[in-house]
Image (cartoon, rainbow, N blue to C red):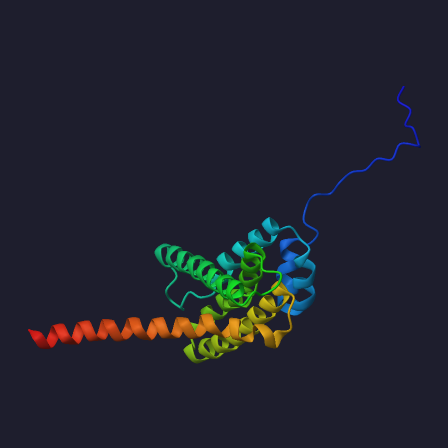
Length: 199
């Protein structure tokens, strides 16, 4: 006969995340400041996993209409993860140079990954894009602006700073990306045309 002692205090620890991924997913879209504040107290591993999941899902929305294939999906996922990782490393480097408080690479990657979630909304829009490319282009611009604002909020909440103090860090990766893209295109065209005229 088992008799439970009422004086014994049964402490069952809950080591799981306090915020589930779907809750974080929904919250980033509609209440990003609150969700990032709540995630700030989560363990770094959970935040990084959420960031990776968000990047993998959001990359699917970046597939152009009519270009859905296994190789395209695989390629866009690889590019998405690498871009996310290197942008995070760049911002972490800048935060180290400027001695930004609360600098945590894992949390930074998780937060910036979650900020890309709006791009997933482009996946159903791409079906419309097969019929009307203008609608897709307008939605793409809107989602890009929305995602940048979330990226900015993610940086502010990751470093626990006011938004204006991290604005430069939010803009630098995009400016660097534009510069590198322009530099790459210029070199490719230069190599192509110089080779063509030398023959």
